Image 1 (cartoon, helix red, strand yellow):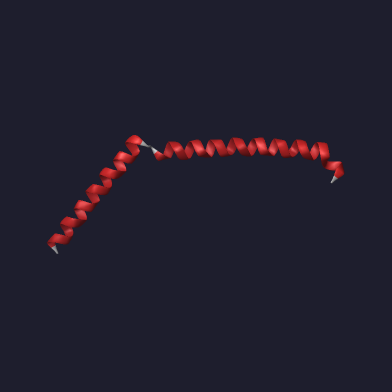
Image 2 (cartoon, rainbow, N blue to C red):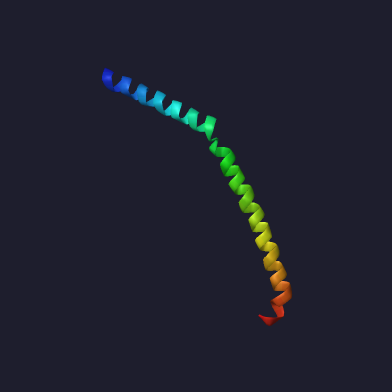
Length: 61
């Protein structure tokens, strides 16, 4: 029982260290926010292009 508890604490410390390094060097939340902003702007551009196409070619449909 004592060995498994020590092993669990060891793994917890290792994963906490890895998560800290990931945030320190990569900060995945900023990447996700940047992706969402890019997707939002692409959606707005796509919507304006679709609106323009419907206005221009709508009578032919």
